Amino acid sequence: MSVKKPKICIGLSGGVDSSVAALLLKQQGYDVFAMFMQNWHDTEGTLHGDCEWEEDRFVAELVARKIGIPFYFVDLSKEYRKRVVDYMFGEYSRGRTPNPDVLCNREIKFDAFWKAAQSLGADMVATGHYCRKETLPDGTCRILEGSDPNKDQSYFLCQLNQEQLSTALFPIGDICKGEVRRLAKEADLPSAEKKDSQGICFVGKVDLPVFLQQKLASVEGDVVEIYDQYYADSAAYSRSQELLSKGCTLSDEELEELATPLDYSDIEFQTETYRSGKKHIKKTRYKAHPHGKIIGRHEGAQFYTIGQRKGLGIGGHSEPVFVISTDIDRNIIYVGEGDAHKGLRRSCLKINTDEIHWIRPDLRMSIGEQRRYRVRIRYRQPLEDATLLMRENGLFILFDRPQRGITAGQFAVWYECDGEMVGSGVINK
Image (cartoon, rainbow, N blue to C red):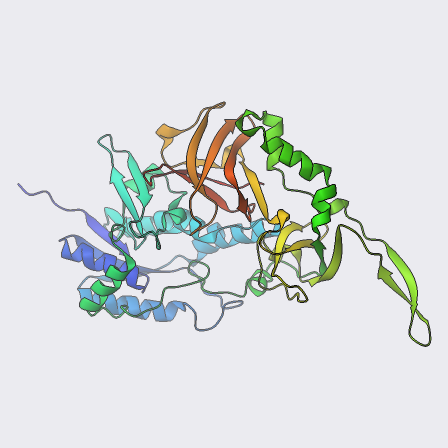
């Protein structure tokens, strides 16, 4: 007696990845139908021509017709604004940098979209993510990196829970991008040559300051460059180096101290008057300071993120200038010259207890426990060796090597050595 295969809803975006995922499901004999979701209507801040939903829907419908599967449309824009975009605005207003793609998967694709798919009779939902899923004999789901190391997208699924994973399929997780393109061309799919989408999930490529200015006011402030001499004279920086030498023997209070970013607000600039030109016109300027200099103006500290290089509009340096800190309360951006700048890297971060998420609840750490994992703090970053320390006041991640651009609001994700993604959390500081 044959077992009836589950009815699958494929989230068809109009891109080549979800198209091939749909193709493979159809070829494998599943009862499959496609659904395209519209999550965004506004065009303010978006760069015209990039990932426009009307074109995507048109291509998705052509793909479904080519494969021979039913096609449906669902408008989830209200849910997306409430559960993703409003969260994004809130995080930026606090000086944190969120990852809307992670939220989109947790809140929309595997929640709101899944509920819409169920209403049409779906037993499972499939996407074109490059990641793999395994189910253990007890029903526990494991999620692993995709087989293509250059396209692995498991990071974006780091907030999914066991219930969501139990009804999820990732048909292209074990094949490489080149093979996906080949299969699409071989099947003559309309999306075969379509470029990969960029920018914010379902919004598209945006001018971020313009996009955020829909809700966040633009207020000019100072851009302050921090010199190397600051670190030579800073007691806080010296203390952080001292704490690092203690490794995993740090107390709760010491870990908290080590995870706290440097505060540059102690640098104060004083003015002086001088006379200029033939008429000796009295003018005011800032006195030279050994630790830094005001080198420009910005549109609002909340529009910038740690490690950012583009959009600063600052020249006159032999090496690129990067954002190393933002002070939202005082509306100041601190920058440093060169990728090796001391302010650009840290070795420890903290995740608040209520923002720790275990994909595998059975592997949850107990207070006082420490484990070795491989960790990434942004998409496409190589995995880095680190020690996770669970303490009363939160989870601390202590990296073997200092990490560039640790950013509050982003997700830290930890993996086993075999590529299984075990847990994640929002970086608090």
